[in-house]
Image 1 (cartoon, rainbow, N blue to C red):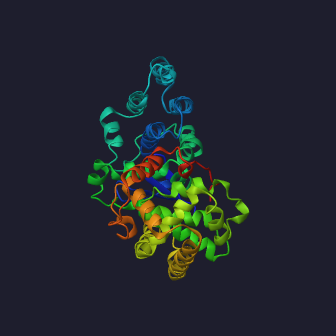
Image 2 (tube, helix red, strand yellow):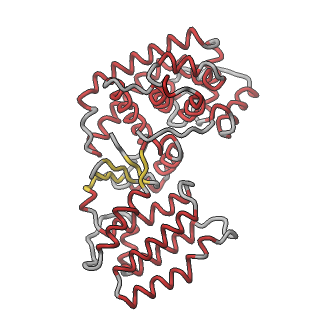
Image 3 (cartoon, rainbow, N blue to C red):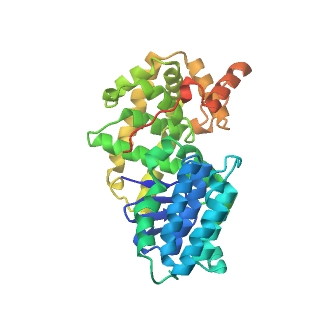
Length: 387
């Protein structure tokens, strides 16, 4: 299941299928127009910069490549003018260190590119993102097309796991929660971040069933589902010292996690997570359906009953381990409650298990501040290989 996601979190891709979250439609990528891909580059250039996925130096180099490749579409005189105007008005300004935020300048660059390649009215229609359009440029496209297919498109798509583990957990959530996206999509994106995590857990369980378990991935998936996608970062940080050779054994991973304070905090989440099992199973079911309908991935649906049984057994094993290896239930409840408060909830992610739990204000605020800051052991970063 090699799902990719664009840097603006709007497009998911599997093989030749692209799913547009905003329009809730799936397309064959080979049937999308040249104008679509120009707009795709525009959207993702800005998003990559805003999300910190690409720095401005990298983007400036990419834009220069784009301009020189798109220039081949134009007649010789217009082509030269196009390049010179870009260099004069935009190239150096993109590296101006006195500019704190290059977002507006990047938007201006793409408006310049777009209105040069297309009529102003046509470009406005393209970048509105409300419909696909047929190609209006009939000749000289070979080099520009090759650039988009070989450099442009891959440069803005990331492995889904990598995105969720790094920028995506935040960027995807922000995109899907934006009022304009909710309005344009009729609200279909509500909860999609959890559906995506559900699909990821289903896939990782499927891999485990096939004899390739990675318990670090599995625990990240489960904690992410229990904490609306955010808590998985805690597992990543705590798992940074776990030998990769231990990833195939649940007991080894849990034992290693229990050696650190962050790992013990994670373990407390599972103390009362049994009431969240049905929620997790529901999200996994939604994830399996989503990848099947939107991305054409049918493998998981045939193994859904096995996946559910595996998850149920996993919850039981983790619960038994937590009872014997970690602190008191009272501490567990308090820590989990603190995490949920940091996420803006009142026990809803764990089925309401801890909504009436009380803990002293200073302790609670300490947990919240630590969780939000990303400076603590619990939120230390870690890079994982692409699946």
